[in-house]
Image: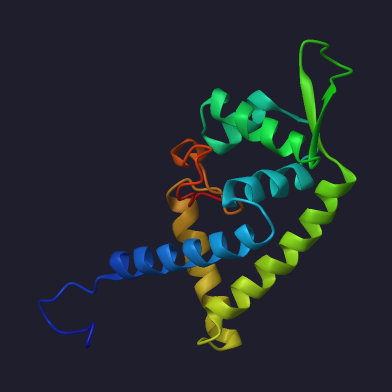
Length: 167
């Protein structure tokens, strides 16, 4: 397929979409192997970077409805990965922290993410990977995206175990 054929669209957006779908699906498969959804993984990653977030702040960062975040945190808390701690500065709020088990899962997720990225980028040279990173960061910034997390967790499937693509 010659993407440079005159008069024919390059289909760059379509290829980005295809790669995104493949990457999301493969990541979901990997996180499922350790009992997590990609949304669980995203929350654990975020709480690892920013411990003490309130549920409201977490919902804002994720672009999710607060009720969705409550059920997500309830699930992570029931599995012993996250704990709610009463805020010392505002007794009406709870801060979210990873437990020791949550920190262990975070370490495991880092390994999964590194392996996932290496496999996805394997067809490229080190120089090409650097170029791609710069270009994707520029696109993400230009569209107001967070380089570290997917927004709109609210689109995830419910507790019935259906597809869960956000991370």
